[in-house]
Length: 115
Length: 200
Image (cartoon, rainbow over all chains, first blue to last red; front, side, top):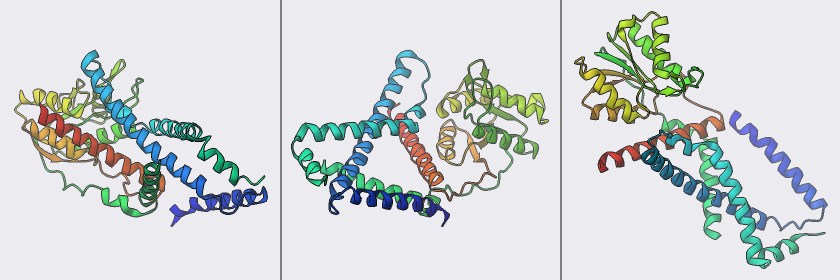
């Protein structure tokens, strides 16, 4: 039961953020696009993390073979790699959005902005 | 992008289940039987800082090996662990064993192995000369299946003696995700070892 406690502050700050957005004039139905974008960023993070890990492992094995130096395969499972993959994903998603549309994404985000 | 959206939703769902349900308890390896007498106790390497400070996992394994020796389960204690800067983890652990009363002639240090596979090969060479082929193997619970396979491949009879007395069931979301991560990491390592063995 204690495990669920950390969800409480998250729920409260989400509720407060929602209230703030409403006050600033955001449309009640405008949550869909940001939610989809967030999910896309998470999905892209998984893709980047997987490719980074596999590539890191391949480079490690190559280094072991070429330099005869020991490089641990565990390095490629470091948590920092996940954080960097998340940054790559966010940057990629923004770039994708701006590239395709000044287009679609830009128009949508403007139409959802209430002010 | 739609595929990424679906993948993102699935990832969040899996993370939520792993972090907020006791599912990770199912990933716990079954408890090992009580250790039986053998010809030697082999303590596998973990990690040590370049200043000679043993990591928690390394210390836990070393203490488990010393405990088994002190119980009289084998006449020989082999400490493994690679060189880290000027010191070797194996030597530091061997010194620790001597400090805890294990006679110097009963402790061997094997500092050359950097992977589980390396350690199995080198310890096989070290113990073959002494006619030892029956081991009590000490490592973490997660690492044990892969380590056991490697040592059995070298012709040893292996009795697992994983590190015990450490709280392994977890309640915090972060701990549960950590446990799932270690399990996935070990699964990947086992897969890699199987492929490498098939190719060699």
